[in-house]
Image 1: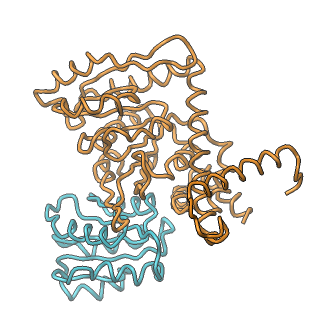
Image 2 (image 1 turned 90 degrees about the vertical axis):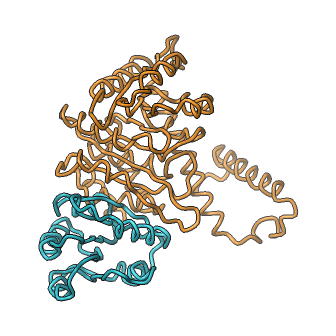
Image 3 (image 1 turned 180 degrees about the vertical axis):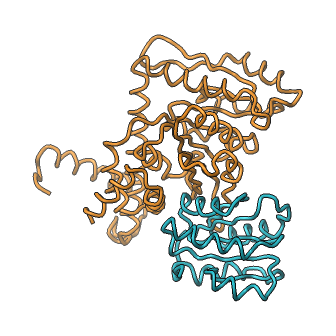
Length: 326
Length: 135
């Protein structure tokens, strides 16, 4: 198994789309073999610039992503794209339509790797696998990795824990909903793009948003990033170069202080939490109910509380050398 | 063989505006629990490249304005060249029955005529995914 993992790692780092692609499927399915490869890929990660694209359904996230791909490719940089669409809670099926909108930007270009993922019930606007898939594309050597979320409302903020820069895509006429979004997704935006800028209402929407004076505070230094609001048109390819420039500006800005390493640490922490949660869920579900609280669960919360306390204590004990080996 | 998450690439020609059938099938497969990547292709290589990047189990091509023989002739080798030897390849739409045999000789596993009862394609995929290889 391990020699397979070494081999797969080499192939993925070497840029094999076939092996990267299969690995991503295994990550989606939570396979233990995939975890072994991921661990080996980590030393090859860390050079990719991660860009998040989020916004409500129909704002034009995929079309804008397509325009960004073209722009980034024109600069000679390679691109990986992870596009997430929702899964049906009833059938578990999904219709993944983002690729269709990116085809023009990607077709025939071996340096663009697009992968569509179904959210598979994960909350937060992404799929559980996304953070790991970012690592795969990073290790493959992609200069830029773009993550496109599902169409979001207010509370899908997971992308902020993954991307260096979050681009919030809105459309003119979103004014009313915008009110509702004030306490949510606008707080994680580093750049706001008002798409469909060819519509007459666009100028007003941009002004409205600018008057909100969105800023992001650097948690590690006494300075702020003023969130730029930009009018773009994915359809007419207007404002795309400026948008790409602002994304790079923000990336450099966070790199000028300890902010960037804070972002990296937060991402790894989120990855750790999600990994623990997923694995514990799987391990626990495999244990018959009578192993806990005699299987009666007269007070399920108390039973859970005792169980978690046991785990934490046992771990503290182990760490203190109490049970030393294994 | 049944698989927990079956992923299907559903492709139709970009210049072909007759999209109703493809969308109907896309919905049928989604409702059968499959993850369906829907996209329109310009050249056949794009289908194979998308199948590679998406790591799909099934490639379905919708045909409305002919060209099926040529598509199959290019598609099967393009899939094999990318190491996708176990992909189930199906076609559907307006395909004359006389073409079914030559298409199967070229490597297409199954052709579906229009007017099938709902669920037929999903049923076929569930029964055959993971059991085939491209000769």
